[in-house]
Amino acid sequence: MINNFGSIYFFKTTFMKNCLVIDWILKIVICQLGRLVVAF
Image (cartoon, rainbow, N blue to C red):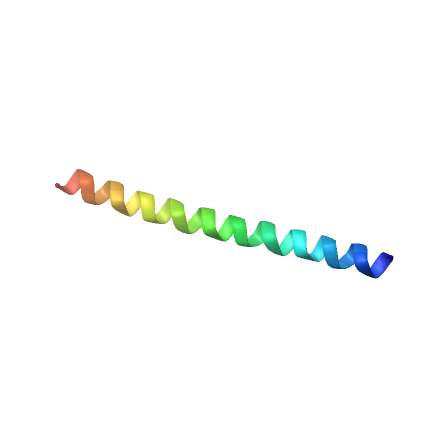
């Protein structure tokens, strides 16, 4: 029971970290695209 709860908690934390990384990458990509649009 405790082990199962721990694995679910671990999955949630890793999933949230992946979401943060994806969000960070998307922000960088959007910023780069914005700079290209401004350059043109």
